Image 1 (cartoon, rainbow, N blue to C red):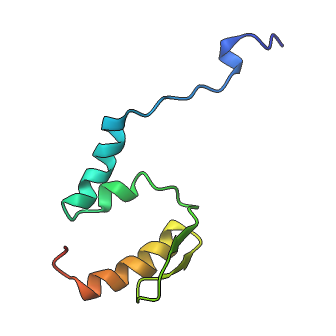
Image 2 (cartoon, one colour):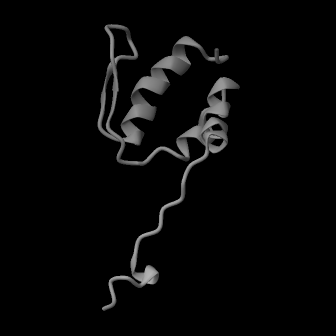
Length: 79
């Protein structure tokens, strides 16, 4: 193996501010579906506080079923 061969190295792509803003834009418009396409299935998410949405969620599925389902019951028409 030639360790200096670029084909053996992991490539990363720099994220632009515009790209990151576009991911969050759907949350601003009240539609989180496209945002959650960018969230890893194995995310570890903590919503701090003593309110009904607070809790520790060990993956995306538990967060969507827990916090977001509670939020949708309280605000069925969005923000």
